[in-house]
Length: 162
Image (cartoon, rainbow, N blue to C red; front, side, top):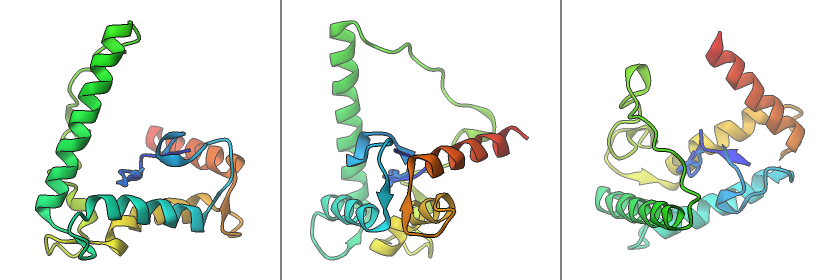
């Protein structure tokens, strides 16, 4: 499933993650886009990601922890790029974003910090992913099916176009 816009985001996003979760994240993030996703599964994944970033275990993500997670993510992406380049499966380089999307996210994911206090709580961390889930779960049964996910994705694409 793709929760990028999530986490997005998120994780997730991105994440969350983000987002991913948030964003929708495809098979990344422990989710399979071809399988139903329950709200409990999403919350469990968000808890896992939050705990991984909250290295001091105080139930909050401070700026230093977010920066460390960001650097670790960048290093992991660099390793993947190098591995793909070495085996010939590298994707062509994309141009830098410009225009309306450039810099929209800001620095260290300020959109996660809803109250602007510089600390991200677990509720703030998962808010966008759960918002996505609620929007995609059209029959409100607590499960997002592959069909609901696809319909939600198509509706978002259509909204961006028009």
